[in-house]
Amino acid sequence: MSKGKWFVVLSLLLVALLLVGCAGYTESNGRSSEQHGGSGGSVTAYAGKANGTSTKDLETRAAGALLDANVVLAVGKGSYKIELLGENDEVTLVLEAQDGQTVSGQGWMVADSFGDASYRVTAVEAENVDYVIEYTYR
Image (cartoon, rainbow, N blue to C red; front, side, top):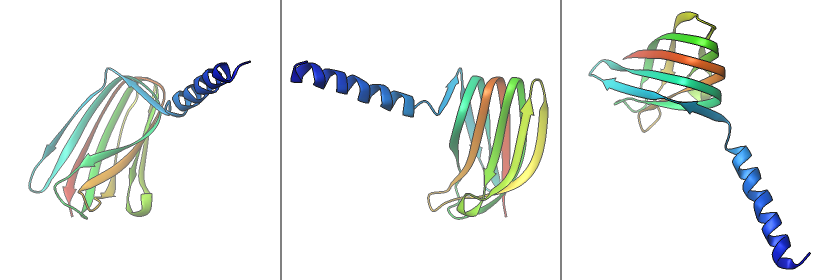
């Protein structure tokens, strides 16, 4: 094989590996909205279909604040898990719903220096996922 053909083959392999590495979380027909107020706020999200794991940020208006959070999660099919993250990514709440379940719980989160609080989601062939995270500042 010529050098040009080897370059093309290696380039295609590299692109394929990069695409596989980016496939950690997929979501279709998703939407979310956030509301912020003086004492807290909320995020409401929906996904028609989801699969994989991702860390998401909830934008607050209070850098470094501790947040008390109430979470409601519903899934139509499959399973979906939400983990609220505290300091040093410590998991402060784990909620998992499967096949038509609605679950709720309370936990806490920490906003970073930019005011972002993180949570992790893990979906396994999940469909019709709805969740609300309402938070108040401590």
